[in-house]
Image (cartoon, rainbow, N blue to C red; front, side, top):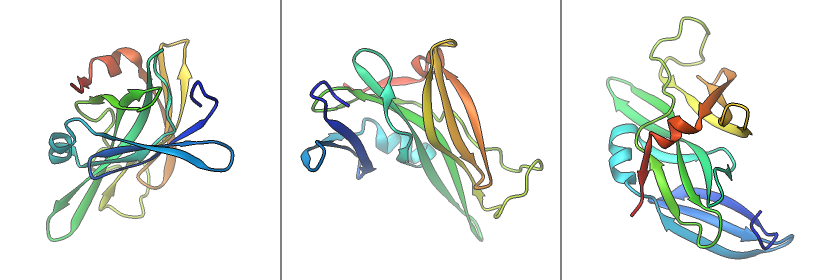
Length: 168
């Protein structure tokens, strides 16, 4: 919710764009689009950036959202690796992206002997929920793991700050 008491939803990431819908109770008032910084470099290394958690306040000026990316490795079969990253964006219109993580915060291990998986071809970390953890100066993020179980991780502000690439 912004300072005009309007609901703002991150609609998605597509074609290097971050899209925010500003809404009242019944209608979309305005659609904002902004460029995702360094998305092409990130995509090359870790896969295309996609959705994840709802946005949450990072500080007075920016929101944060934890995203997933997927990279496909081609062998005699395709292996999909889903990782967790993040980006910061302005709290007010035009909701421009301020910074992007320079690498994933969480990567699945290649072979998990601890849990049965529906497919050995999908290595998955998919963020879904987030709350602020003021006690530890960070965020507790829930995520799906290998399409089988749910887990949580505590991500500290300092780990986010050390992983930022500012959009100029």
